[in-house]
Image (cartoon, rainbow, N blue to C red; front, side, top):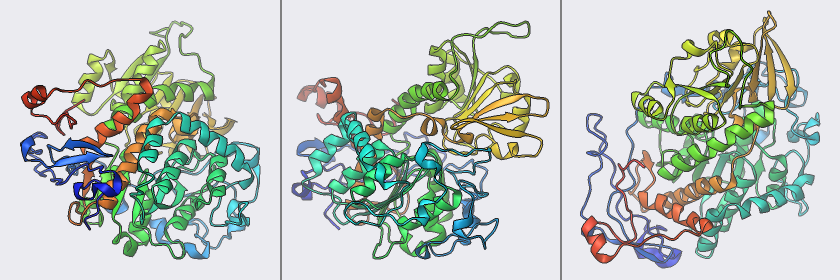
Length: 594
């Protein structure tokens, strides 16, 4: 098809927002350097582009394919999820039932609330004596799946905790809109052109006020959507109710069981008279279910947009094994996502999470004879963008910060930033707080936690809920004691207690909030990636994983500069010619490291 939203020939249909005309894929030679994999063309050889009516020139082949480097100790057939075998045992979601692996004959109405024995990449069962309640409405013993629900207009194609909370959720969405200038600007610029007419999007992301703004933006741009949650504890029930009241098919509530989790995703894929052609995923669970159970639908997909490191790993695994049947856009590794969401957002939200859950004082610690430091000692595992943000905030609060790393480049960065790089075993008996930020599994094991001091806090800022080996703590010799929402004490036989936050899930999403401004940046990249994949001419993208074009990153950044009353300097014709740049960008090559 030739009606790309970013195609110059069709610019009149969508205000001319052409992002590229000829995306060349990166040469997949593992022996070559990143720079050599990105051939550059002369600027004068590139056709002109337009973004929302503004003329630009495209210089590079900006949608590149990253080589699939897979060092994860996982079977590609399992796609990084132990839930794979369980999915094969699920009955058709159209009948409203999913069988449990521990008791396949158990009826839905008799299951215990918020309990599960299977695991996914983004959810795990609640082992403590008191499961999350969230609010008074969450204490209901009847599952939302067992209730007949409809909104004020008689719409019934949804499943939320309490539709009566819709008015509260609507206020939260309106507040979020005020703090999300970029996604609102994109909505206003493109709503008349409706570049997503015909797109049928299956969404599996966190459901909160900020993502509700994205969902309603996609609808305003012409898309049809069905939405579920990628995390069993991050859903804001009132926001889900507000979306349902607006007529959005949403299937999510806070405190889902594992069975509920997969049932909700299934409802978004397999509804009557519904043939999805796009996926917006966070963690890869919707894509995983499509591969395992709906391969015929998966073959017809026009594109997948993935925003998490775990989901991106899954995509590369599928690409290597030949199971990826549709083009996928890697939003997680885009410059705009990596720098702003992963770094700046996590830098603020880790403090908020720890304060809300533990009331901890970071600035000091009573000295003792066996203590080397008077400050809180924090260990951050992983020094990627998330780890950098966490380490910076902890250091700013007066803590002594240690870092663990497998990558010598990141380790050297940590050293240059003033942190000591250690192995976990070298400091495990000293640390007061452990923060995981790797996206890997088994980073903090039972052996490590046996050595942690009494009162140590353990939490996760990565994606997968297996970074901390929580399952190893679910043994008869240890006692779980619910202290407050999302806070558990794990008690050893000798009386030692560890403080575990969010049962090893992402603490900033389960126990605090993410700044709306930062989410605006991320949601803009997601929306633009969907637009690009949906409108791309046939043959532009193969069944592989691509990075976002540089011009998209720059455009998203420009949408947010007005909030700071910032004014960009413009190149003169002579300066642009000297640098070999188009006056409107892109201003950096794909291999540039910001």
